[in-house]
Image 1 (cartoon, one colour):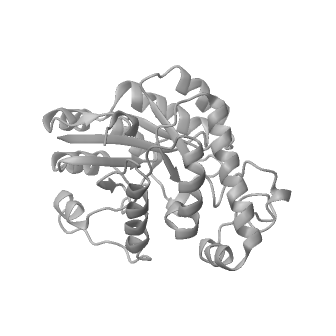
Image 2 (cartoon, rainbow, N blue to C red):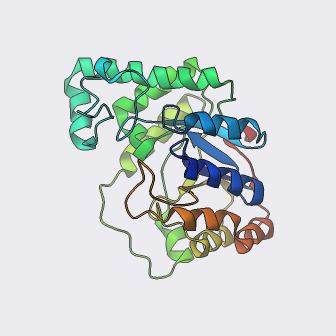
Length: 280
């Protein structure tokens, strides 16, 4: 069986993102969204989620580059001069290893974000993190421990087979980047040991911000059996606070409602849903 979770990250980041999430769920293949509980448009995202009962909503933990849930004064090792979570992920990861105070602050912030999601009353479909920072072993340990207290049942494991990308787009050459595969593999082992649902593969990593209609249709045409998460960053337009430079937000929204994409889901007989629709 081909099971497919099509996720929009950054739900709540802006009205443009929220509008695209609603459009892509109503008129396209989007089946899940990951909520930034303290982002500027989080309240609007909740209104939309409550009128979209078929949309599965999870927690998009913000541990870098955006708005914390606790006051910045309570997170001196985690925030910058603007009161946002730090951007220097490499140094941040080292500080977590060296500073017990930083680990305590991070645990408190992670718990605060889980608690904020609980207060919404929405069922918790899944958990992931901004910039996939939850694959850091120390962060993963905190998320797994704290998530258990809030009924976490599924977590993203960002592993993307390069062979699928080459088949979808012949001539594809991956960009040079830090190899996070060992950390993702470790997260997969720990998540399985915790009894969590994880995807067999996650599509959208190499082409993050560039999941065009052509690419999404090509990926779906060769969708393997098993559970696949295809994650995206849709918005009706750019120009909002917190946007990622160079991301083709509107093109990603277009991909989710494209007729070829919708037809491809039907053609390969993929079962769309959220992680909470998957049994072990």
